[in-house]
Image (cartoon, rainbow, N blue to C red):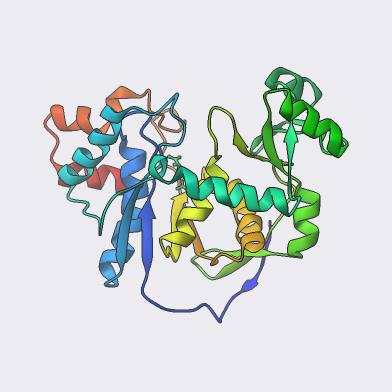
Length: 286
Ligand code: GLU
């Protein structure tokens, strides 16, 4: 992951950034920092700032939080261009990408239970969670088909070894000009789709950044490990390569990250306490 060199040849065009929250809770000041990281450069350079609601996981997302995100951003004075994109309305697009990867044999069905995966993982605490030991990678084609036909629950996993061979060596570029080597194996054979959530974050986010013409992906440093997987998917699909700006994370007084359960730090509780939008934005930028 080391910084190899500075890339002098970075293309300059209209900047398109986005804020892509999941409506699983109220926005907190960490989200305000993230939204500002995209909004400020877009507004400062006559670019576009997009709002995308990442509401694929129907078990965790709530419409009330979706509405609250729009309201809180408006209260902060953070405006966006065009229509809000909601991932739940584009499931057919993601399904067709997954079908294409299946046809190219770059994904395979995995029948393992979550508990088995945790038990057998090679790296139980990898940066993207447990690294799948590959149990189902080499199942015979007829066994796969028979188990799917019998209705056995399964997830679709990216065969990262095959994908990396096809894509060749890759890098991702940070907005400061540094170029980083992609480690395609960082999360192992990641899940790209499963029954309850037909498409994973990794597939939906890369699809949408491409489809929406995002040129600079601004998001917290905690998501940097995912960028390695995203670059691999982009290369396999021939999608545009954005530049990345993994911004610092806002920490609580005790040094831990804000979470959606920290109700005192939500934009709405700060607003109810009488803070002005300017004061909340200053807190987020401090
Ligand atoms: N939806 C993700 C989240 O709320 C962020 C996705 C991204 O910025 O790439 O954590």
